[in-house]
Amino acid sequence: MDIVVCIKRVPFTQEVDLEIDSGQRDIVKDGLAFVLNEWDNYALEEAISLKERLGGQVTVVSVGSEEDEEVLRRALAMGADRAIRVDAGNRTLDVRCISRILAKVVKDLPFDLILTGAQADDTNEGCVGVMLAEELGLPHASVVKGVEVLDKGLRIRVELEGGTEEISLIKLPALLTIQTGINEPRYVSVMGIRKAAKKELKVLALEELRLGSGSLEPDSSVERLFFPPEQGGAQMLTGDPATIAERILKILKEKGVIQ
Amino acid sequence: MKGPILALAEHRKGEIRDITYEILAKADQLSVKTGSDSICILIEAPGQGLQEGLKGWAKKILLIEAKGLEVFNSEVYKAYLLEITKALKPFLVFLPHTPWGMDLAPALSVKAGLPLVSDCVDIILEDGNPKAIRQIYGGKLYSQVSFKPSSTYLASIRPGSIQVEANPGHDTVIQGFDTPVSIPPLGKTFEEFVETGQGDVDISQAPFLISIGRGIGDQERIEEVRELTEKLGAVLSCSRPIVDKNWLPKYHQVGTSGKTVKPKVYLALGISGAFQHVAGIKGSGTIIAVNKDKKAPIFRVAHFGVAEDLFRIVSALKEKIGG
Image (cartoon, rainbow over all chains, first blue to last red; front, side, top):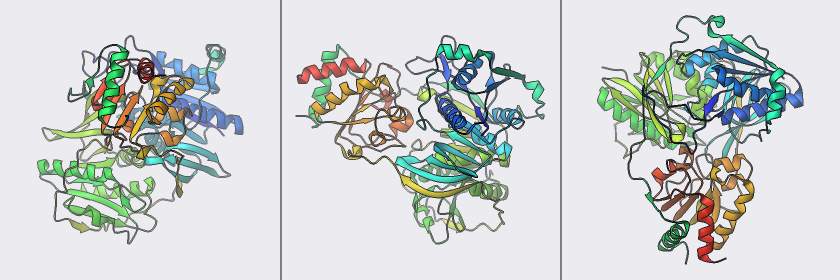
């Protein structure tokens, strides 16, 4: 089974104080660590384990800068066969533009299945995968938590709310957006990444794709970023751990959950 | 005058889902400003009668009944919404940003050539133009997003983000939709629903939950918290990353895709407070959050906060209660 996985590099923002840059439309990215989008890591693992069981090729694609090649190298180390980066220069692209670019690249690749993350850690839109499927006229399913390969298609589990899952059949070729927890992504060593340096990583300039006029006009634009309104919020308990522990125990007693 | 504001009803197993009332409330609120109609789109199987529960919430209900539609299918919904948007020329279409909506909205946007902003927590009007308010970077920041000029704008709305007040009590008119809609051969077909996450503990009934999140860092250290829960007579629960890593079974998971809980006290240890998690703890009496990151969104919903390493607090608590 030939599989294409679309991935993205995102800033790691847990336990980090974010700053808004002077243009008000983006965060200050200097000094932030960058990682592979968590959902994409699960999508990659799913693709590679399917390939290991069924044979075929895994191609990873990302739209981004040279620095974003880091996640493509990581994907190659995990077991992808080749990587493609579309260099978008300094353009501001929304999900619609990205899906058009990916469609143009992916349609010439061999594939039975396309996987993307269900959403990205940074802007959380959860659109690119399904937009790409629609561009290519493929059946699609979102927030997929399980994949079983059948003779003529896949049986998939879609994660809904409250512990409910939906079982569906989907024809191939298809696109699935993958939910976290579907598998246990393998560990990637620095040595592994070094070894994978020999694998093919192709860079395409946007111009080479000959996208139609208007294809890079975004449907939506960020006007400004702002911090959450300071309202209510927790009463912070301060002091040394022993003092804080005492305060917590007092609250637990007051609320009647401990004696 | 602008076109109507549409809101798509979501239902499962014969029940209207809460997000429907949320987007209907927003549609109704904005329709007062635009002077146009709010219209609920309801797609159901013949005889389901779900429109009864939607009366009053919009000026009109556009009711589509067809065999097999007791279950959502993005391809079928897309085909209907494509024709509906052409026929009604709405100003705005609100869709749920749920797993089902996530499979529909982006496809509809591409197919209909209409701009979409997804996962919005609010939609406002500025000089008559819609602007989307979104949360990004795990809720640490908000963004205001504009659409490219269009006749119709699509917005998918995050569940739990719109305050629902009482039923506005419109004298709702129920209409059918006469335009023929051709449904293409389906690429995806529904088989069944399954319920996961049943276990020997029911966290939804526990009066005192101690809940762990990503901040626990290491599977082996869960034991340290488990000891504390036993000593305090609490029940152990967790946020999504812990279940994704297989560190605890699914029935411990609190949040949108896990369980909604309503303990008297919810003690969150190392949980950042992603909205899917917060949505599951809103019914808690008192929320105490411990997290190293003083900017963690959990502190915006907690009643008491401790910006400290969770293990230092866990040790101190154990010491105080002896043992």
